[in-house]
Image (cartoon, rainbow, N blue to C red; front, side):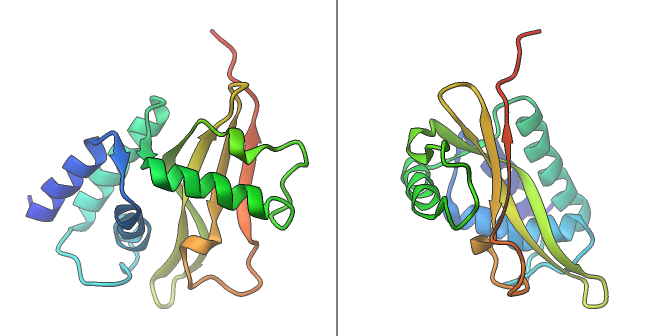
Length: 164
């Protein structure tokens, strides 16, 4: 077990995740877990360790307690979605300023290059709305390697869950 693996396990057990850690996840840990080359600085994390980190993130998301963005980043997210809602094709009824919280629930792959073993991915954030519905989105602003004609953002509006 590498020391960076222990560090990542501690990070994914925290309540909130910092912006720079999310960047490291989508640029290095997620691609490595998928069998692609990590971007940026070299990492000592092994593929199996990266897969274990990702498994824990997905497990938390399935349980409804995914890693939450920091308060300042939640505010930035609300402001960004509000300012860009028309450009992103969001419904007119969508009120980004009413979002209660943002949680990391996975990663969306925009492009993959099997020849060079590279992956352009973005984090999927789940925004909780006051009516209990959720809004999942993966902005391409998080990664600079996507094709210029790539869509501005993948998103999905989910209705409120019904009690079982």
